[in-house]
Image (tube, rainbow, N blue to C red; front, side, top):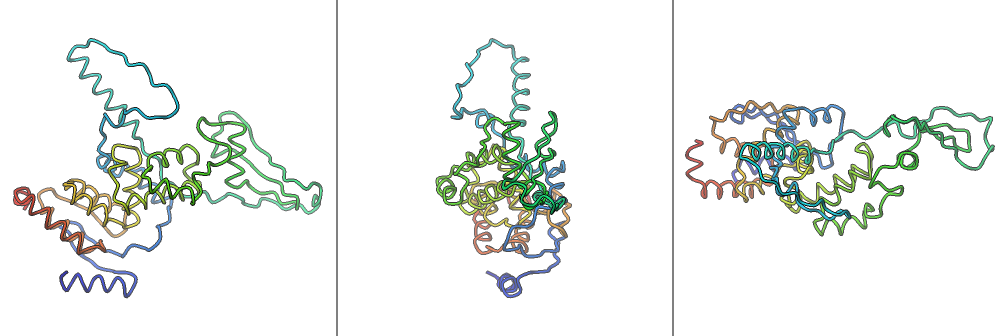
Length: 339
């Protein structure tokens, strides 16, 4: 580690943050160290997730493979009977284009949205009905066509308090009146922390995330807890390949980028010869973090760009620099062309 890198690491640890301005080949960086906790999901951050440039980057990083996207999965249903047809070359090409579109739809990413904040909000307190009954009364709008998220559900407490329903109450009411296939009235015990840990250790990431998408609304605190815990485990174990070509890899990389946790993914990419993914991830990273402006030019030295990014935005600089050096040694011809 160079003296400058050593000082940078010490400064991060000593002060808890870093403010630094550096130019990364047309990337102007005003960097602050990543927080020890997850960054709050705000409306502004959620809007960035849905922005077309970010969605395009996430889709490229997903590496949709048709064979994996349409693979057989054990979901408790009988698979469709295969159909065989004789087709011309033009018909085959048309069918292949349609399959690519269906594959893109199949990996449509679950949204990342802020937590709902109006749950349990007190609307009125009527002391005249205190003691009228010992049970709570739940009032629900059961109009057809109203989404579960917008449906009005309020609760009258025995002490006269009228409030909006909490998450569990809204879930139960919506599932009773308008049940959704695959969603259970009571949350499965697999989502309890004690039961979730063995599933994570077993690498059942896609199963966990698919089930969470089915059981919870994306603005539910339980959804955030389960999904973000899974993302953390995937990142720590560097098992990104498990989620590749699925709808969950994009949100995972978005999570790592906005929380400023690039180290493990960059190391994984360098060790698995995914140079283009590093460039795409740096583009994603700069779009999501305030003060980072990206105007990347393919004609610039991308190896120097990555090296500067490691020095300014990463904590595990020693291993990343060693991995980058090994990569450049293995791919010296590619390195000479990009320089």
